[in-house]
Image 1 (cartoon, one colour):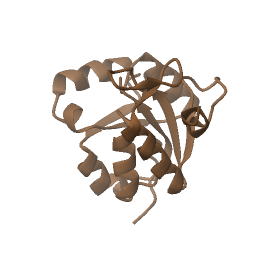
Image 2 (cartoon, one colour):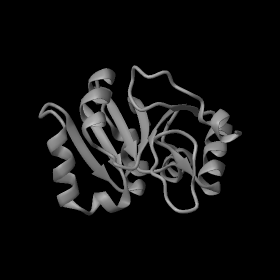
Image 3 (cartoon, one colour):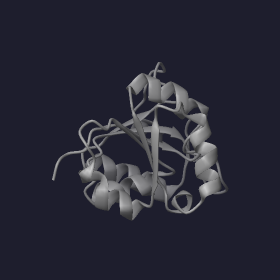
Image 4 (cartoon, one colour):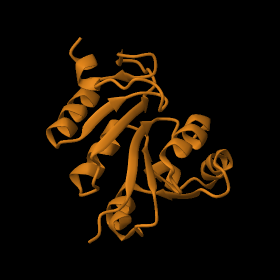
Length: 161
């Protein structure tokens, strides 16, 4: 099994949008955006909307979490992958099942009832906190930032406040 060339894994509940489609892709030099999300993998309308955000030279794949786990190691070394997931639980599932996530960018996790806002773009509940701690235990570097030129923050420090 070869190690896939994952440039960055990002949590963003909006998945692909302008910030991801332009700023991050250009910053990383990615040529493939993989969205690992069970619902979007089955929703062609959402896929088409997300595709419209990206430049034509950037390829996209919309996989379920399980398909991502099953085939990520078959990626060509020429594929410079930007992996996007909707939430921390999805990132943890991928990591626990062999997807080599070493660095996790936390971009956007919307506020919902029962969640605590820890930054202007990230809100968490107890399940999220436990998942972040588990990812940390698994050696994943956790970096909260919206855009590349922003100063990143370790989300664990924000969770302890």
